[in-house]
Length: 177
Image 1 (tube, rainbow, N blue to C red):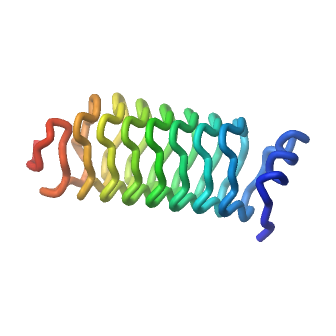
Image 2: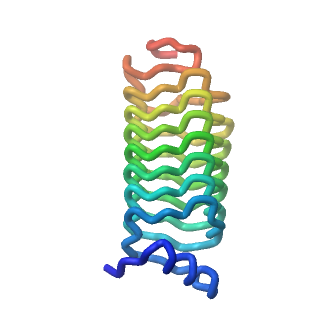
């Protein structure tokens, strides 16, 4: 697996490269970078610093982003099906109209994230913090929501999602709606 440094990723993108499939990008610092339209499918991007990055219209299919910092990232229309964002920080990230089908977001922090119109069917959100998130028209059928915090989440429709008594609903209760 080819490993690229932060400088190498930026230089490659500047020269027109958009395909970063399967690369080792662990620990890169791409703070405030505009990499929209890129393909990072199956890339290893764990513990990376990606706050304020623009990855709109990009592909992160089966990408591994465990423990990465993605606060206030712009990632609308992202294709991150089967991606792994376990323990990632996505506070106020814009993931609207994205595909996160069967993605793993275990213990991820999505406070205030924009997930309007996002496909979260079959996603694993156990222990995720979705407090104050925007979930209008988000598809959550068969999403795992045990230990998930949905307190004050806007327009969350958990019908068809897998909830239990550890799920905190938008109204703050821990009981089935």
